[in-house]
Amino acid sequence: MADVKGFLKDSTVLVLLVVAVLNLICCALVYRFSIFVHGDLYNYGLIFSLDWAEDFYYSNTMLWVFLDGAIVLSFLSIIPHRQYSIKPSKASKWLGFLLPSITIIYQALSIMYFWQMYDIVKNRLGDFGLISSVEWTSTFSSLSNTTFALLVVALLILFIPALRTTGIIEVEIVKEEEIETKSKPKKRAKSKKKVKS
Image 1 (cartoon, helix red, strand yellow):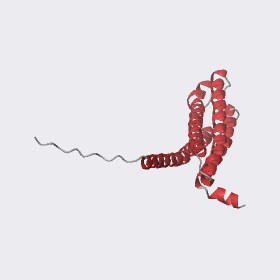
Image 2: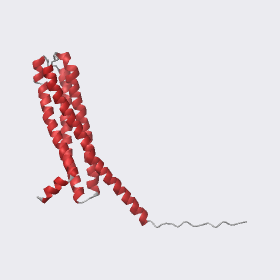
Image 3: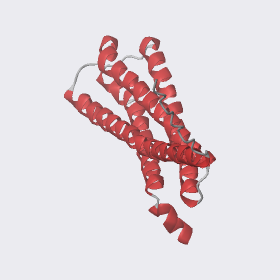
Image 4: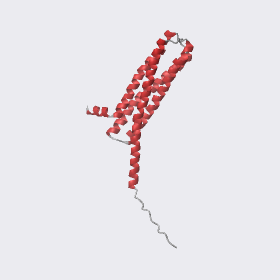
């Protein structure tokens, strides 16, 4: 039980848990967004066509790949950060930097693919019979805006563990340089006597 308390007291671990939870909420919102497009919008005149559906399916699939990857990586990032706070090592330090950095890339790609899905609905579905209506646009706006906001917040929060580890790495490099300079014997400068002529 004491380990769980220590686990929850580690602020970096909590930050990574928050990112994972935000992304899990985004998964639910993306699922609802997909059902909205491939269900509700047909009631507003949308006609199914491979011209838009293939692009939508591709973006949706890629979004799920990167969003799920970001969730897994944020959970995996907890391990080296927790290990570093218990017993610091070079491996936990570098993994604590690399895993959140890769997660940032996955998160950014998730945002990009969600933006493509948003763009397809907003700009292309009118060409396929979708009638503009306040009823569906309000639902669409609330779903997309909430999803974007949570994805971006999770992305920004991910910089905390990456930057924290960068600070640790910088401190370690400075300490190693100080140790190296202390271990080398200092050479005394020889004074040259000027010969007067």
